[in-house]
Image (cartoon, rainbow, N blue to C red; front, side, top):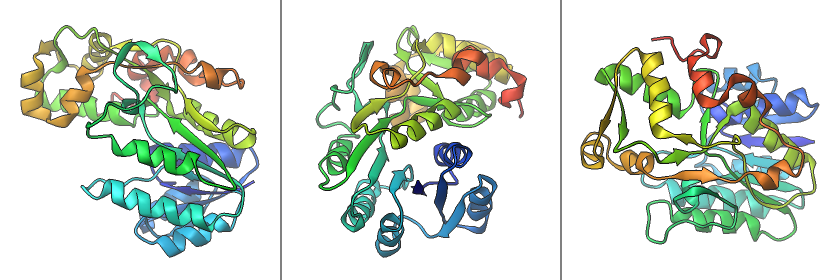
Length: 293
């Protein structure tokens, strides 16, 4: 297949690019800078210079191959509008093929019990715009639409957990919220990349979760973070966490447990994560690179 990836130099996108190239596919990757182009080339892909604010370029690249994997996102308040314009342009230009977009675990309702793909976002929340983002892809005519909802992605010394390690080191403590019994699903980035590849190569459509078998309690996760950062592990209240970290504190206080049985029925298994012992094993494994200051 010939696949165009947005966010191809990012944490998830670069892993997807490497997995697809390894499996014999041609990959073109969107890159915003010289450094991004170098990362895309290092993955074995062909860089396409541009960003999500160039709908004509995105449309041309989307139409040129067999499919699109959309992992890029802007960070500002215009994120929803930018995503809508970029995805609409790509979908309109495609004549068949497959389009995979990426949303996330907070799309699903907070639940201690792993939720299926049927769970939807809480109305009125900050991520409600993802409802429209998913519907845009799933409802596109004449192509196969797929949504991947990764939970907390870890591995290879990067991802959001790397930021939690850095924050703990800077603060002098690794802090979970309240009793830390709320649970998050996790997935190693290389396992997640294989999930994207398998979905592209299948005839599947719809929404898929990709997650390790067992969600991790936050107290357990932050114990591993404290070990790696070499700082004590402590609890603080949600109010204290919000004062320090704003909106992110609310996410870390919720449950985000996902059921990935649907993807497993297609033959996917999180082999890398299982071999490492999950996110906590990866954090404590020197080869994964989280101990570097």
